[in-house]
Length: 314
Ligand SMILES: O=C(O)CCC(=O)C(=O)O
Image 1 (cartoon, rainbow, N blue to C red):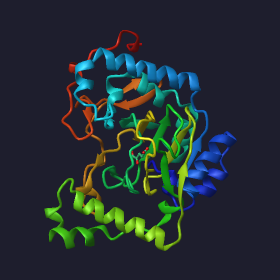
Image 2: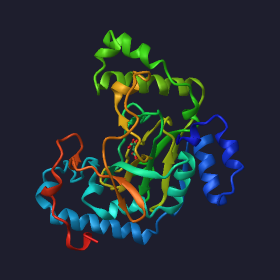
Image 3: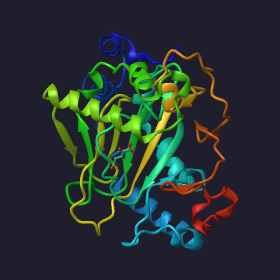
Image 4: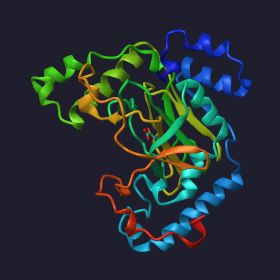
């Protein structure tokens, strides 16, 4: 069964493995601190090229993109843009150290599940991803960001509650029963229980004196975070600035991902096999989602509504 990093002796097991020392160091960071920063996973030139490819794609699909800009001309996070922009999928397939680290941690080859393309920082409050990436078996997930531009205090960066992944899980059934009366009444998604869970996790971390670190990174750096690590986006001081980055949600192949209904009812028996197919991109497996591409919370555009930019079709 995949999930080496979840075993109680994971750090000792990985320490004893014959691994590239760089891969070993990052794998141990994820287990012990809850995250790791892999510097220069891509060159600055490759990052600039990927942003240029995005701009070409944007021009080829001007009507769709124009309809989704905010007052400053920026986009909300774009869901699954990689399914129409191969250059973004290649930030997964070509990220060799990150893949090697995640393969070791899962004990199985890592696959791309879904993605969020950010033009600016998210400014999200501290949260664990697990209520919306609830796998069976549980916690077989990593969040991963590739930065295409430097991220810092001015344009907003990732904040992590170091060691917060080690805090005990809350009594999720009790929370759900208190709110909805019974586990059968749990909705698939509901902001109220999301907020209660995240507020309680953040308060527990503060109560234990855990510090929140701002991760200032360069273009090309990659961050991996543990499924239970509280993290968020720092406030953006200069709202005119961009901070292009791709967040990828990854699992071992075939692992199904459910949402809050599963997360807050962890004993409910659910299928442990993902219903979606995978495709091979370069030598890696990628979930073959064709639901479309969404801007923020707006309904998805169908994949056939997008035109490939001439140079982006490689
Ligand atoms: O990069 C950021 O601003 C935060 C991203 C994040 O928290 C997420 O996608 O879950």
